[in-house]
Amino acid sequence: MRSRTIPMREVYVWELPVRMYHWVNMMCVIALCITGFIIGNPPAFMNGTEAYFNYWFGTVRFVHFIAAFLFFFNFIFRTYWGFAGNEFSRWTNFIPLKRSQWKEIVDVIKVDILQVTHQKIDSIGHNALASLVYFITFLIFLLQCLTGFGMYSAMSKSFLPKMFAWIVPVLGGDMGVRQLHHILMWGFIIFAIVHVYLVFYHDYIERRGVTSSMIGGWKFIEEDVVERHEAETGENTKC
Amino acid sequence: MEHKQRSFYEEVRGEGTSRRDFLKFCTTMAAFLGLESSGVGQIVKALETKPRLPVIWFHFQECTCCSESFIRASHPIVATIVLDKISLDYQETLMAASGYQAEEAYKTVMAKHSGEYIVMVEGSIPTENEAYCCIGGRSALQILQEAAKNAMAVVAWGNCASAGCVQAAKPNPTGAKPVHKVISGKPVINVQGCPPIADVMAGVVVHLLTFGRIPQLDELNRPKAFYSRRVHDTCYRRANFDAGLFVESFDDEGAKKGYCLYKMGCKGPVTYNSCGIIKWNDGISYPIQSGHPCIGCSEEGFWDNGPFYQHLPSVAGFGIETTADKVGLGLGIATAVGVAGHAIVTNIRKHRELSNVPDKSSEIENPKV
Ligand code: HEM
Ligand code: HEM
Ligand code: SF4
Ligand code: SF4
Image (cartoon, rainbow over all chains, first blue to last red):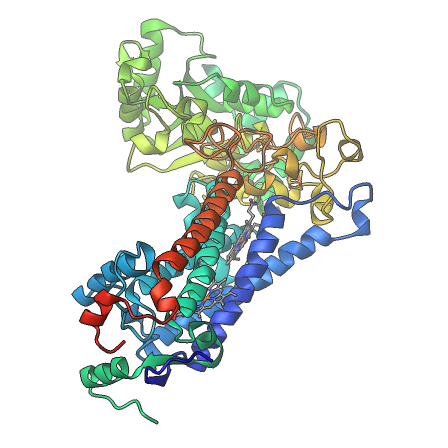
């Protein structure tokens, strides 16, 4: 039997609201990508029938819109949690305003992307590069909601989509809005490939239990890293 | 110019139009404009009593299809409106005068009716080099800016004047710009379409005539009465769209059955116009009814959103027929390959971590490991 003897401590990083947000978001994104792709490229599997016979394309669009509303409010909720949640989910993590964050971004690129050095990255929550990427994804989420609700406003009288109608003239009409909306779908797909890969990569290399941290909320962190963190924040996280 | 004193109603009666037809026309216009039934009375009264609307009509970079559409409106009263009711004191295609006389005509209107006349424009305005469009030795830009200064409002006919149309399509060699981009401080009504529907043009004129002010406009300055709904929202093929029944090629079974033209590149879902309701040629038909997808002619940049028979426009810089999906799929595959490569490299370069052997360098920096 092989075993490792570094002292680790369990740290509660992702509170329930963050975890709920994450999985609701993932399910919405998957549903939106599938239905969105079908809306853009509908297959011809019902051809030969008459229109009164079915409503499948209408249903696909309906699912897209339901998932879209869920996605939007879930995103609003996560934004709120960026102000209300614990230190790891705070908005300050996501926007690199501090020098130390930029230094860590460079370190992560050297250690995990280029793999030219092998020192450990100490961050307990998201590392600084991951946070920056999540911040960019949040902006893409916002843009996708803008363009989506912008198109939706043409078929709705309710105030929420109307609030986004201004994006249409900015992009020169619905065609530009649809094109951007469609292009951004590929942004989601590419993000998801890289994101899931990197989660598994970190789990594989660091063995801190990153993957399951989004399920149970706890990560294994090296004792000295936790102690240094406690010294910096003047906080005792032991429970 | 003795007919100046006569009312519009007297004029059309004199030409043999019955009162019944006159009222029918007023009612149709009221319906197009989305007025309440009392609006019919207002239109009748205006056409019976109001003085003529002084109009200067310019032709810049255009093909005259808007004029064609307008004067070919099958309703005879519409033609009367253009030729008699609005006083076309200056219209390069239709006026008899030429040369100095013509120039005089519009200068007179500007002087006599300052603040009251309407400038109607067909065509875009070149800005790359103003000389690309000159009339009487002056550039389109100079002429328009001068005329617009004391106008009550400016009507931009068609896609050219509203959004630049084909002249402004990439690479836009003449720097063609629509009216609203080259003048300021005046309300501009964009009557979109290539050309706009004749009845829509008539409706805008009747509105100006009746109420003496511009109609309600959307964010792109198009009259809401005609451009607040998408072609898709009023399309009779919509049931086929919702049922997911699409024409796959122009001569297939679906085309014969009247399926939705979405996959043939129909731009109805992204195009605001009245084609589905008012239709063309006296309400006989419209492109989709004739089996052809909407090409989005009342939208900005519709030439650049092509090819016409493709759902997604081609992505600039990637060549024709390269859609966002092709680019996206390419990037997706590249990402997957990149990720796989990274996984292989990781297993080689990080073998020490993986087999729990501390890396020498990290041992020095990080004695904890
Ligand atoms: C992960 C997020 C989303 C993805 C990946 C996505 C993807 C797509 C795609 C690929 C299309 C087809 C575009 C085309 O016609 O070529 C589409 C259409 C559309 N999406 Fe989304 N979408 C997302 C979020 C949203 C949101 C938040 C809304 C807000 C209501 C929305 C509303 C719409 C609307 C209105 C359409 C047009 C439907 C139609 O033409 O019938 N989408 N979406
Ligand atoms: C099976 C699929 C997925 C797994 C296993 C997974 C797992 C994780 C894990 C473990 C984290 C925390 C990473 C860290 O500590 O830095 C995370 C964060 C995140 N994931 Fe995923 N993820 C998945 C799919 C997705 C998808 C499809 C999206 C959206 C497109 C997504 C968006 C995010 C975002 C935005 C965060 C940051 C969370 C926050 O701070 O609010 N994930 N994910
Ligand atoms: S033919 Fe065009 S406008 Fe009509 S329902 Fe289909 S997509 Fe919409
Ligand atoms: S159907 Fe579309 S392309 Fe055809 S005239 Fe109407 S708006 Fe223009």
